[in-house]
Length: 187
Image 1 (tube, rainbow, N blue to C red):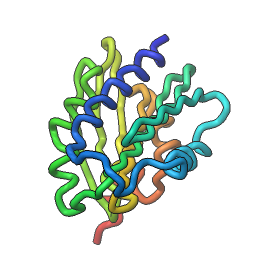
Image 2: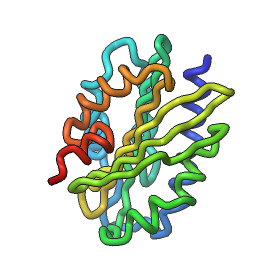
Image 3: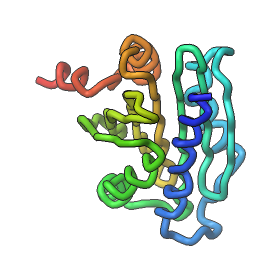
């Protein structure tokens, strides 16, 4: 039951994400079946049969969640389509800002972005959250895929299970599983 509630918390933010895209959709580069497949392929191999997957397609996004009940875990992709593109130099400041996090994490009791780091086209946010009095750790990787496609990928695990977070994060993002890993690679 708790995993269903956490999934609902993640999905509450989807409405806020759609509101944040201000460009009106037109014939630029709309969402396609290929977009859905790219989103599924990105992380599907990470999650085995013990995880339950749900896919939702919207006009400008593909939303995929994976739920693990025991031990509790959530994987979440928000594959965003900016049909007429975005300005890469400002997207992280103008879109992935405090308002975005307030909107996408509003279902949690509390959240705190503990640290943020960046390498290449990937930005990682390490977030401490609380839900129904339980502490969780979330990592959100924002990947700039193309000039019209961005993917936000979340992993959420109980705070007392850092082993799970590290295993899954290192498998999916070996170049930046956590921000201290990036700091160790800098000269």
